[in-house]
Image (cartoon, rainbow, N blue to C red; front, side, top):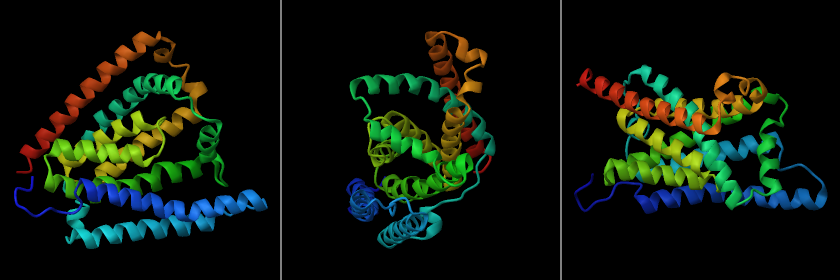
Length: 271
């Protein structure tokens, strides 16, 4: 924690500004194109060239802007310290278990705030591309984790961890990560994922570990959607809802313990 009068970039306010700026840059182009497409029957908004240019341009601008504001080396913003790769085993079991009880949470949110048809239409468009499921994997399990982790567990966590206690840095970065997705129906899942990845950054100090963890989570979601008919035939999903929830809580809890133990073991052998 920074005990001096100087604040490192970004503070909580600076992180909020960075996230809003990123959303604004995306929106300032998408909104006019959406209006144009609506009135002229065109498809500029879904044009792949536009998407690549806008996404790459906005990402590079945000990262360059944050780099200049942070006034530090890239290796500090995006650390790559050694970590025990075995940590991914309990991470995978935690994420798989979390998807079970988060499904129940999402149903409760859906009852309180029913999702409009356009939300599910946008969600289904993930699979609507020239490369089908593999195109969805590229967008959701490769590109999105890289971009979002560089911003949230890279730039934002770098400043928050230097200004505040680690638990606050983890919580705030997870909160902004969840709010960044701009819908309440994803909030529980993205917030929990943000908490996990923030903790992973604290204990590993490796941006690649966060990217890969994020990628694994998104891939699990895609696989569960694409192959649900086959997955639902596993004996676990033939159990009652209460039994599924109890098992998922137990597996998630044990996984958290093993993540902590592996992190502690790694620190002892690298110091």
